Image (cartoon, rainbow, N blue to C red):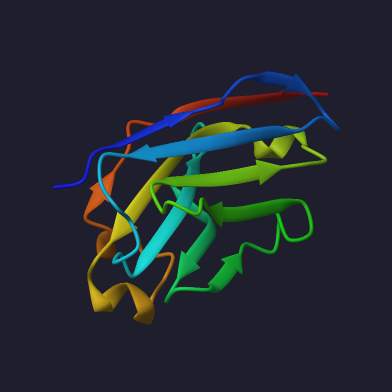
Length: 126
């Protein structure tokens, strides 16, 4: 089973940028859905950005135009570029991948993702 390790989380001021990385232990090119999720204190985990079916991308309304999900050319590292950060972006960010076709029916459904990283903390101060 693939092993995922996130990095890049930090504490920054509002308006700043961060790039999160998710390094995989094996090739991700055959995974159907690859995503970034986040969980803020006291809130449920939510999907932030999903890369699916090869070249399709989905973003939560709250991050559209500010965040960009990408996969490196070797298809072993998933990135999340985050610009114009806001205090409400604060949370523990996880990457997750799925080789289940079911993820396409609900790309932000956590239950469809069978491998998760340990998370990296992002804190945005105002």
